[in-house]
Length: 313
Image (cartoon, rainbow, N blue to C red; front, side, top):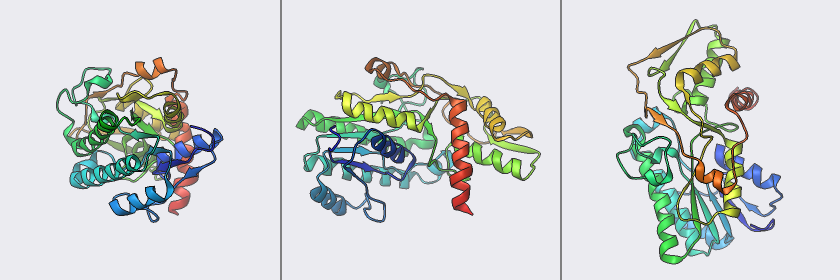
């Protein structure tokens, strides 16, 4: 990308999209196009087509998505599948129709099989069944990355896909019911501290292993890939490190300053038992993450205190 290339960031108000926008601005890219949901509903095919016909972006970061944790995915599978699939198909198709030089599709590590060999290599995609609690979202994301691959094969486009591990950081979703595990823990322990609650109950038994990547590190990688990678195969984005949910909960509690008891509701689902990405491809391309988990959680908690709570008052 040239510094004056026309770049469209889809989903620029979300956690990932806003981080990509910050990274682009930091690196001197000056011709960035954005639209809010009110200005452009990405599920509306005709409006998306008109936007691309008018703006003709040269590069597209497709970070827009309907996202949520176990509860949201399990309760609303039809919504997650439909909205994500139609958004990504509209954007990718219109980008292709209007001569977009390169598009980067942001997926999720949930696309990989529930019981995939660990660490998970990119080629393990579609080798066995998905995790049922987020199957609908995963199927939509798989469709998006496959459509990019098929356009490359049939029409010679340069559309790439990156599959990040669990993300956290500024602009995360801290909804008490529909957020992902790390922001949910930050909110739960903060509220328990403020209310002097004697204990906090977490879902499952604490045994699942998870990997977490600070969103600004992902954004750096996304811009790096747009400039340095043209391969058809998706690329994993992660740290190569994992932590149990039990240890994660204790770490969050320590950072937040909550000193009460942590209990576990074993009637609630654990989700996938282990999900660690193989990041050797990213490493071979010349990229590694920068933000260690404890440092990142401190930054995320500060964002929660200064931005999320302020806007909720």
